Length: 228
Image (tube, rainbow, N blue to C red):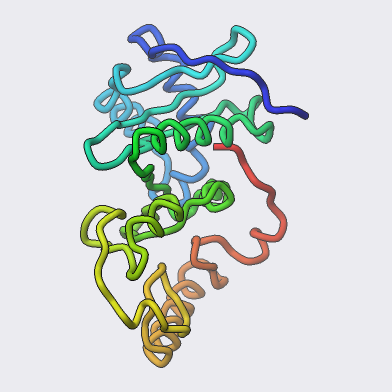
């Protein structure tokens, strides 16, 4: 099925009900895996953070199909959020939206960055579109376009403590072929020791070992790509 044609319009206060329902439909499962889902708490958080000036509504054939929130910062464009209604997922719409953002940012000479919950399988879509993990928090992966990272760091690696475009000179990073964890080469013995610790903790907590995206291998094989 070809990717649908879309237009964008500015979000307004009148889109509150649509955007809250969209957020619930697209994010409830992944949020539940991390923090659990309390409807009252989630409703209060949504009201507190609601700011239509930061978002654009994705319209397909006259119907509201999703939302994107893009922050155009001085040193990078940050994709703060993209949510596609379930009826419009798996049709390439999310990929087209992100591709358009990347092209526009490239024309402006700026990189595109984003963050995604570790349990969100959208991480695989971002990788397919050329993003790489440049760092992480307790709950999220931080991503930047691999082309932007390579252009900014031709002889080093991204500095996780600052923007993805900032480089930390490291001769070891240029030649080290040891296992990589989160895009940073670490000694093999340390990597194995910590991986064993992480495996034990994961088995104790979840009953199975998860991959680096927090997703069990069995589930990973079963599921397909989503478009958000």
